[in-house]
Length: 281
Image 1 (cartoon, rainbow, N blue to C red):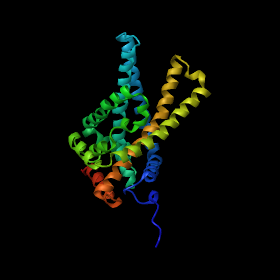
Image 2: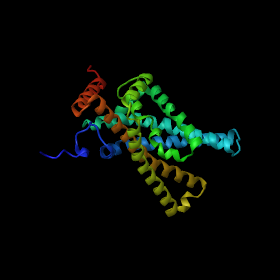
Image 3: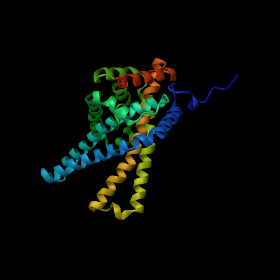
Image 4: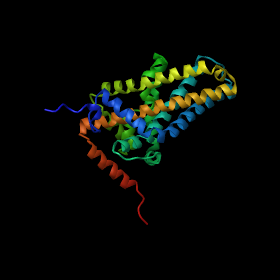
């Protein structure tokens, strides 16, 4: 009797364990990274600019003195912008990743087409995560930002249900709840493990840059621009990698509960492609 095929090389979608999560997340990251990188860098930069604008407005227009309340308001804006922005990026990337699994090379235009009619529902899903995450971070501590990095990119199954399955928020929430029944701990632990590694690597890179190029990180306009650039450039890959892990989680759950296999996914992608194709004449 031949030995069973190693999980990491089996066709996907299929139920996977941790090594399968890592293998397929890395595969999607490598296959789609260059296509999605400009979108993620621009998205992270936008989040940083929005947060910077709020801080400037508080200090210069409202003339709010630096205090615990001001810091809390600034941090609330940071968490909200990051979560909603990350959710929007994940929503655009989701169709690209799903089609990549099926062997199709899709661009960000595919994600934009699916996002537009469901934009409001995706934003609501981001806020749905932002509010409890904000409370948790404020009361438990900022270290939970690292542990709950997947939440910055929205609840992955919920986002996929909205943009890929074209469900409204309420129906998508029910759909996500059903898929995650009995699987919350396993999925969350896998996403946290996959997110913490790149996030820690980002912190190491930023610390090394601070040591190698200290003059560029010390105050002034040049220092602020350099800090914003390095944060955007190092955060984008982390968010992109975590988004890919979200797609793996979504397809893993569907494979477990609906017996979704590569042939069924290929049929879904083909139907979606035909539906989005412009009609002749």
